[in-house]
Amino acid sequence: MDRTRARPCTCASARLSPEQGRLHSLGGMTTRTLYLLCSAAPPVFDVARVIEDAQARGWDVCLGLTPTAADWLEDSLDGLAALTGYPVRSRYRKPGQPDMWPQADAVLVAPATMNTINSWAQGITSSWLIGFIAEAIGKGIALTAMPCVNNAYAQHPQFPKSLETLRQAGVRVLFGPDGFEPNAPGERRPYPWAAALDSVNGLYNERARAR
Ligand SMILES: Cc1cc2nc3c(=O)[nH]c(=O)nc-3n(C[C@H](O)[C@H](O)[C@H](O)COP(=O)(O)O)c2cc1C
Image (cartoon, rainbow, N blue to C red; front, side):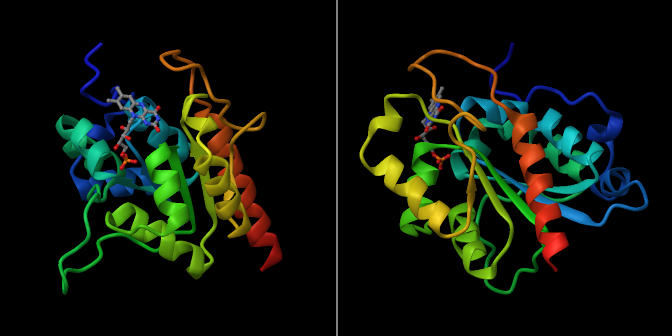
């Protein structure tokens, strides 16, 4: 398999124009918007299939990437934009440039690397993605994060502190038995994307009931 490309999605919408793609994902009735924000760990190559899965669950999906993840998916970015119907974002807008995305009803940060988790927890907003999710805490947006780190990274003293900081700030962190369980360095395991999407739905429904 060519690991420099997102694994292909199974629907025709990857060949549609952005506007057609948006209508496809809306199916004429969807109004819930999910920001799927990915950093540079191998499960990011599943992103087309994950977008389709989220769309099938009724989400209108906008895809954001860290600069490194955008670099990894460079050859797939046009197809991913057509699949979601929105530009793929990875950089801060220039002052005065419009925001092309609808407002987020939920955010899933996955796969979340060691770098992304620690930068987020410490508020290091030098990239657009971290800046967005740092601000999203203060805006009260429903935030779910699923790390992707091996069990050597996970033993770094900063990592559990960062998870605790994010949980205290209201982020639902899927790490451990109900989410991602760290693997040995170099070991490949399926990344539990379906559990992440289930959890996003659950959090969204909890928030909707509380309103
Ligand atoms: C092939 C490869 C696999 C990687 N897998 C992981 C991983 O699973 N978890 C992780 O935290 N970093 C992983 N990294 C390192 C990150 O890509 C690197 O720290 C990067 O700077 C993360 O940037 P980002 O958080 O801005 O995406 C991997 C790097 C490479 C080249």
